[in-house]
Figure 1 (cartoon, rainbow, N blue to C red):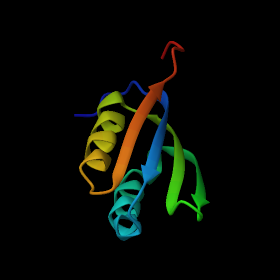
Figure 2: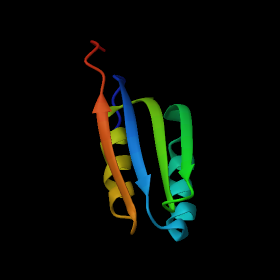
Figure 3: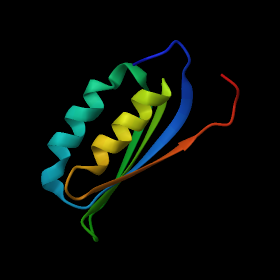
Figure 4: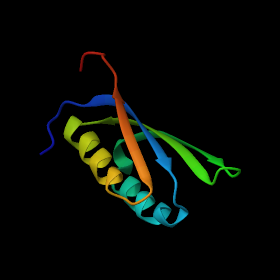
Length: 86
């Protein structure tokens, strides 16, 4: 359930299996209205991609996204929240 209050956060994502990228992108597209910016860095030598997503969203949207990302095989995600008051 979304409230009117939003939080600023950065979601750090590590993608270790390229086959997981389509599902990951579908989830991010579903939250696109809350995404302020996105940066992806492929590390081709190690076969890993590092992605950071800046969001301004209700806390339940951010935590829900993080949980869904963590259930994708080969994907790890962690969230850092701003301490700024809403």
